[in-house]
Each structure stands twice: as structure tokens, then as C-alpha cells.
Amino acid sequence: MLKQILLELQTRLQTGLIAGSNILLSDERLSTILQKVDTLAAKSPVFQKLSALCKSIFEDQAHLEANILEALSFLDALLITQADWKYEEETQSISILTEKAYTNIKYSQLKPLIQALSTTGSGRYDIVHSTWLRHPELFQDYRLLPYVIQDLGDTYAELADLNEEILKYCGKKIVPLLKDGFDPAGKKEMLRRIKLIVQLGGKEENAFYLEMYPLAQPAIQKEIVMGLSCDDSNRDYLMHIADSEKGKLKEAALHALSRIRDDAVDEYLLTKTKKNKKFLNYALYSNHEEIIQSLCITVKEQLEYLMKNPQLTTYDEEDALEESLSLLAYKTGDTIMDLLTWIMDHDQPLWEIRDSHKHLYKITRNFENIHPINFMHPTVTPLKISEYVMETLFHTYLKYRSEDIISMIEALYKQYPLIATPVYARMLFLEDYAHAYDRLTQCIDVKKARELYADIWKYVVYDEDMKQYVFKVKLLSDALKQDTIEILLGDTLDMRWIELLLDKKIVTKGIFKKNKEIVYGRELPLCSRIMVQLANLDDMELKDILLPYFEKNKHTICHIYVKKLYGLPIANDLTTYLKGAKCNQYEIVAITESFCTEEEAFHVFHALLSHLKSKNANNREYYYIESAIHGIEESEEY
Image (cartoon, rainbow, N blue to C red; front, top):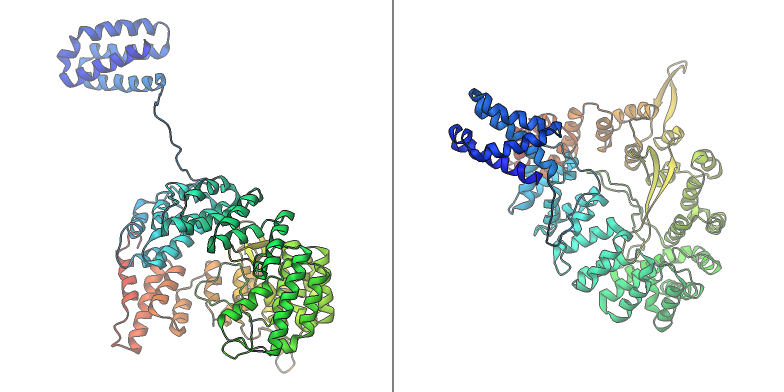
């Protein structure tokens, strides 16, 4: 009844406002409604206010329209407090971000990206890539994320790959958006979506995997299987898939199953391997004694054959050998120790094995899990067979950190120090980070100390969010999923490590040897890269070492990173570096845009363009630089 009175009053006032004052003031229905409002005014201050506003319409006709509008505004607010909602149809959940998205970014900043992600044609990749390098925060905005997800199916593969990388960076919060509108029978876009859902959502999305699997096309089913491996409760379902499917889907199910550490899984795999040795390829995570025995026999026979016939003829043979050796990871006990010892004893004949190009056979694997420094090639050290199997043992240590594995590494170091030193040193470093410098430098005597310890520190980075130094490694994994591990080291850094890695020395000069000067050894690119990984704004002592060092060592791009971190001018240094670097036009633009503000980039581009044209005035291939200059000139921010 109350709501009906208010709605009728609203209708009379709106009609009168349109029809005119004469009709409104003579409307008998309005007078009747106002009598009811007066009755309500005796019971409530709110209706007293409404009654007073309505009376002013009649009493102050000089301001009639203003009084009507004021009464209507108050009436609208009053009606909202009386409203209720009813929805008859079935409701649907909406996707929301699980973390706060950026909302203070102008739409004009997002518009070029939205256009690049939602249209076709050339030049789109450059727009997205340059923005990603310079302003990654824009890609956290909820208005842009749906376009990035939609463009995962872009026909230009490089752009689709970049979109996937961007979404990985956004993290777990985007999983609801990835699930929204997911089509299990879809193609490229949906395949990339499910990969991201599995990587970011993991076990928490198990119900989604179970719902989607029966509806999915084979390529998407394979990715869903990887998600099912995150939850041990899916064991029997994965066994069913492995037994009922064929081809790649069967392989995926077997790999997924092997990740579940369970006696029933071990028995299942053991039954398979007894029928066919190829099923050992799915036993990476099994520590069942019979499986270990079978694996060790197979690997030993394979290596004995190669010692007699030391020539691998195809890439497939090389990959098969590496895969067999990788299976030694995550296994412990006397059987595995006996095989490792046998391999160490036969280091020399195994070193004589040749690859398909008739070079000495080495395994090249990069286990670093630190976001690479852009525009700097990673350093990967090829390993011979004995060194690689020691690496498998180190990954076993990383996964379990148990006393028996520590004892195995110590025993192999004592017996084979030349081969086992790198792994032994890394283990000591992680076991007692706070005292690692004293312990390692006292017990390990090596000629190339910088190289040995750089091999440890290349896995360490300072995490700005946690305010901790973190040891990050990509673990040996099966073909289904890349496993990683992060070990928190602490919030302190022993500066003696920095001095060792940079080969810092104090020398005396002058006739009477009284003048002291700090000098550094030759610049090792890996050590310079490590300095970038460790640099942080909170450590002033480290800053006082790094800035003088990089003033004299500018062969890599690392000195630009350090100056940028500490807020120092970089335009001149960057220009000088790019003049001497062997970079193409696209790389010059990408490097400059990633480091510089638009104003800095404008001056750097002009200086480089003048330099390049002075060397080759007839060269017309300056399109990227000239386009970048034009883009800055057209920018709203410039």
C-alpha cells in the first residue's frame, strides 16, 4: 500500500512536469494522494520532509519546476528504500577476478591494445609486445584481459604465444575468465585456455577437469589429463583412461598416473613393464625396488652397448639415451647407487661416445627457473654422461632433501671429486646458506672458483615481494608437465660472494706501494647477469659495489639494468651500447622501449638513427626506428 502511494505520487508529479503547471495544480488526484502523504507524515520524519516538498509546489509557484524536481529526487530515493527484487528465470554465475584488478588506467591507454587484439592485419604484434615490455601493468586491467584471452587463437602464432605468456604472468586470478565460455570441443584458443587453467589452477580446478573431459576433443583431453594428475583421487580414472585409450592420450594418462605416488600405481606400472620394457619411460617418479632394478639393468645394458659401439647415428638415439638417463632421478637405494658408481668408474669410455654429428656426446639442458634477462642469451653448460647422472641425483635431493640422498652425494664426492664437485657444492650451499661461504671455500679447492660458484648463484634471485633470496630450479620432468622448485634462502647476502664472483681485489700502486685501488677481473657475462638477479633497492652495500663495477664493465646489457634499477640516467649509456651491439632494427626498438621513458627513447632513437645513417646513408631499412619515433610523436603522453 505504501509503495503504491509513492508510485502514484511519482506518476502525478512527472505528468504535471510535462503537461504544465496549470494541469498539475488543478489535478484532483494529486490532492487526494497528498492527503495520504500528510497522514503518513504524522508518523515519520521522512514523510514530513516529503510532505513539505510537495506543499512548496503549491505555495512557491515562482520556483515551480525546481520544487517539482526536488520533490521527485527525494521521492526516487525513498522508493529505492522500499524496493524489492524478484527474478523468475534460472540465474547464471558471472566470472569475476579473484584479485583486485587495476581500475585507475585511462581507457585511452588501453584502446590501442584492444584494437590490436581484436582486429587483424600487420603491426599488431609490435603494439602488444612493446607495451608488454614497457607497461606490463596494463595487462592486469579487467577491461583488457578478455581481449587477451580471446586472442589466444590468433592466426599469427607469435602473437598467440605472447598472449599466453602475458596471461601466465597475470597469475591465478584469471582462471575464472579462462573458464568463462570455455568450449571443450574448440580449437587453438581453447587448447591454450585449458593449458593455462591447468598451470594456474592446478588441483583446485579438479571438478572442472572431470566435467570437461568427456566433452572434449582429443588434444584438449590430453591437457585435461595433466590437470587430473594434480589430484591423487583421480588414480582409478587415470588407470581407466590408460587402459581404454590409445596413442598420445594413452601416453598422457600413463605420465599423469606416474605422478601419483601410490603403491597401487607402482604395482600397475610394474605389471606393464614386465610385459614391455618401454613402460619404464613412465616410471620417472616411481621408487619401487623392482622398477628400479629393471631400469638400472636396462640403462647399464644400453651404456655397455654404446661403449662397444660408440656412435649414435640419429637424433632419436640421442634423445632415447637422454631419456633413459633422466629416469634415474627421484630414485634412492643401493641399486641406484651401484649404477651411479659404475657410470663414474666408466667415465672415460663413456666420454668417447659420439653424437650423430660425430662430436663428443653431451647433454644440453637448462634447469634455471629465473625469468631470463631480456636481450641476453642464457648460459647453458653441456654435460657429459657422468655429469648428467650426478645432475639427476641433485634433482632427487631437491625433491626429497633426505639424509640418505645427502649421504649418496657425499660418498660420490669423496670418490669422484672431479665429477661430483658442482653438485656437492650446490648441496652444501642449500644445506647451510648462512655459513655457505666459509664452508665451501674451506673444504673445496678449485682453480676456477668463479665458474664453480657462478654455477650455484645463477639459480638465485632476489624476490622483491618476499624480501628474500630464492633458489629456483626447473626439475627433471616427464613430457606432460614442467615441475619447478623454489627454496627460500634468507634475507641476507654475504658480500664475500659478490667479491668472489666479480674477482674483486685491492692492489697497491705507486713507488712506495701506499696507494690502494680496487680492481676487478675480466667480466664474465654469467656473473654480470647474476648481479642483476641479486640487485635490490634495500641493499646499499651491494649498490656501492655494483655501480663502480658496471661503470667499468659494459660489455653486456646488465649495466643498463642496474642503472635503471637505481634510478640513474641511462639514455647515453644505452645509446653507446646499442651503437656497438650487433642488434637488428627490431631489437634496437624493443630494447630501447623496454628501458626508456618515451622522452628518453625519443632522443635515443634519433641518436641511433643518425649514427646508422652516417655509416650507410643509402640503407632504407630504418623502418622500425622511424616508426617508433613517429609513434612517440603521436602519443598522448609525449
